Length: 478
Image (cartoon, rainbow, N blue to C red; front, side, top):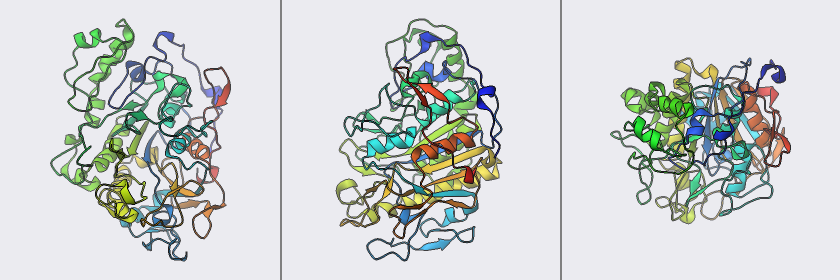
């Protein structure tokens, strides 16, 4: 693996203090400082395969024993009811619930030894997204994000990457949030709002009806509005909601005053054909949309491909949906019981539902196949990981509970070796047997594969120095 001298290859842009730390991002909102990323650090080109990353975040945690790390010889009550199947790579098996993904095993680097110690969603999301343990831990409802947090992976890409006219990071189809609380670790924290991801809010209201599963006549309208005039943009003060969650109407916020060159550049971006076209799935063929799946996550995976194709460096797809009544839909938090409105009788009922494993196998395999066919896979790193895994023991509701001590994550595409397995677990996929990997190591590997320096020094609000990513790259798969 080639390693560049980052200190020699980077230069700092001057700061525009007037644009720092203006506001925060909510679901369906976008700030002008985000668009322009005025505090970004310009980076000279670095030799690496990956130019962009699609970060598939599986909120709730995929069950390693049922997908990526099958243990068919484990005792009853621990082993999966699913069976392992052969893949495109001899010696690597996956779940029989992922037959399409199995055909692309030659593209995958499966890490079977991820580990940390937090069993709470919020604390684990923070660790997964920032690569750093939350200290002290803040559990729900105290785990909302704030400007003392460490930056998320999307903000790392913004801070470390080259400055361009486009935002560095998008987050779709919704923020990691519920009950009005946005999880810590999902924005730029103390780096300032200039490095926050652009968060596209969902338009459909699924609070009572649940997620949209298969509807050939609908699409998630992840699009910039057409009716934002120069006069309206000039009249905005501070935050400008360019993306709407329900009816595409801009909303008023207070903040900064003048319409300067930054705002003018942002206005040009609003109408940038590349971004608007990337968010318009009507430009895709019916066959491609059918291949990904006519559901919100199939469409989100497809939108992610279109965004990186348009030049966005990192797109996070948050596979998550929780109603205000704390009912869980189309996520991987498969306890069973009362967590799900339709399939709440068992955890495996949730896992096998159309919106879970079947939709994932279809969309994930379609993404890998599509990127490959378009010649984009070698320059696009695809990450698939949750905040933890699931327990070895199947619970009374025929599901699995939170388990951070050993779980799996998968990298594919640019910058990593395909057809590989790194690390191993014990006979029950309960604890790491060889080569433990922390969330920090995982994110450092992503940064390294994309030509970004995970050891770059940043400073918190107190001026204390830290590495931007608290981990070491897994050189064996790079």
